Amino acid sequence: MRVWFITGASRGFGALIAEAALKAGDAVVATARDPSTVTARLGSHERLHATRLDVTSEAEAHEAAGEAVKRFGRIDILVNNAGYGLLGAIEEASDAETQKLFGTNVFGLLSVTRAVLPHMRRQRSGHVINISSVGGYAGYPGWGVYGATKFAVEGISEALAGEVAPLGIRVTVVEPGFFRTDFLDESSLSRTAQVIDDYHESVGRTRAHAADVNGGQRGDPRKLAQAFLKLVDAKNPPLRLPLGSDTVERIEAKNSFVARELAGWRSVATSTDFTSDDA
Image 1 (cartoon, helix red, strand yellow):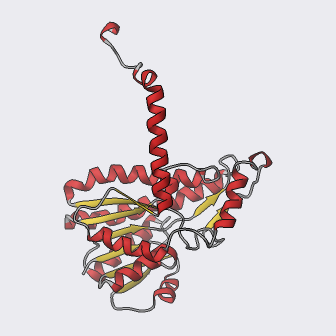
Image 2 (cartoon, helix red, strand yellow):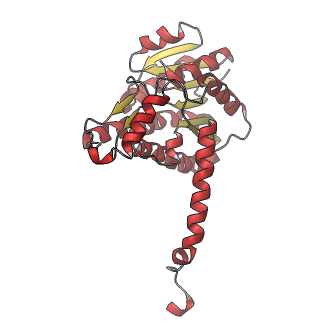
Image 3 (cartoon, helix red, strand yellow):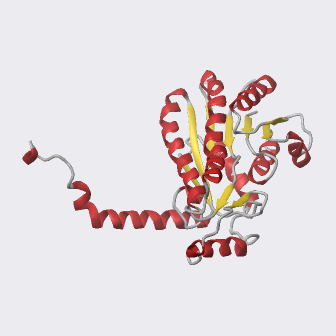
């Protein structure tokens, strides 16, 4: 029996992953700011422990991790899922909105990771799974600040993977595309208070698209939960796991663009090295 520690587990991806893990016979520590919302969503189960965790509080993160180990003896899988979106142009996003978003999506993830890693290091095993986004691999107008938090998660995950690999701990960053969850609903998505008319042609289109696509996204969230079970069962889990054909298409398009741009500017890019003539 594996022990999962899942943040933001009362709804969306977190709740679905928790349900799948329980059905697979595993134990789940499901966290939320209000643990009663977890039991309301998942019910009561002997292998389920619902506990309070505001990821922006490092003290609560350590307390929740300690509770998990006290209850089940170990933590095998950490799923850093808690987070939310912010829709708006980079200039439109205020300092307060930006700091709040980074506080949850980046600093909160770091706090929980720091709280759980000592237990995984002691075990010399574990799997850290960080939820990024297609927006963590390629930027979109209107999602710049949100995407920046996910780009940060990608960089943290890459470095962390190298740091903990000798300790028997794996790291995967998951990059979902658009799934039919509540992400685009008001409960999960914030919008910048400021709207600047000059961005109507760029960010305005993104706002309209977000409203139009909600409820018609390509991704099936229940299939995402099953993909998580395949991920944790893998003997050699990937560093990156894109989920959704829209993510795959976006990654391929960006990789192709980067390769073309590098080819066009290679001579300039390499011209800044020292050469024997500079000695």
